[in-house]
Amino acid sequence: MLLVVGRIGKPHGIRGEVTVEVRTDEPEARFAPGSVLRTEPGAVPTEPGAWRVPPELTVESARWHQGRLLVVFEGVLGRDVAEALRNTLVGVDSADVAPPEDPEEFHDHQLVGLAVVTRDGERLGEVARIDHAPASDLLVLRRPEGPPALIPFVKAIVPEVDLAGGRVVVDLPSGLLDL
Image 1 (cartoon, rainbow, N blue to C red):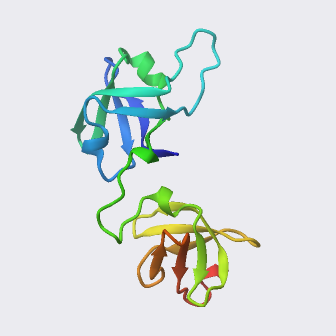
Image 2: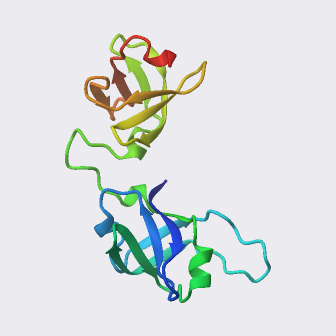
């Protein structure tokens, strides 16, 4: 499974450097020179002979500039090629990512697909994805009936995550699923 660590933005300058919207807690490690990132292209060029996004990109250099990460990828030698990378998601294989050392911390891919149950064992659905909001992360609950629901991923509402048992135990305030 591809764990997205960034989205390539607009070119910066004329030599192939691009801005990257960082989507990882470890940008210095993920975008270190020599790192190989898998790609998931945004828009595929339709013109014959147009430059296509390769399945992997190798980081040549990375630096911070005014709060933005600027990256040069090997083989991206000019602004036109850099422009072709715009909106491409870059990531790493989940199998290559070590689990967090903190037992209270989880990677998104560990939570997606887990059953969501109440303290009484009532199954509410499953975790469809994680939305990273400014105040807290949100579990997106896919319910068997009805629209998806958002559950704040905080200890008071999600007291237990049982990876081995394949479930997330929730203690929901009344009315939360009715929003």
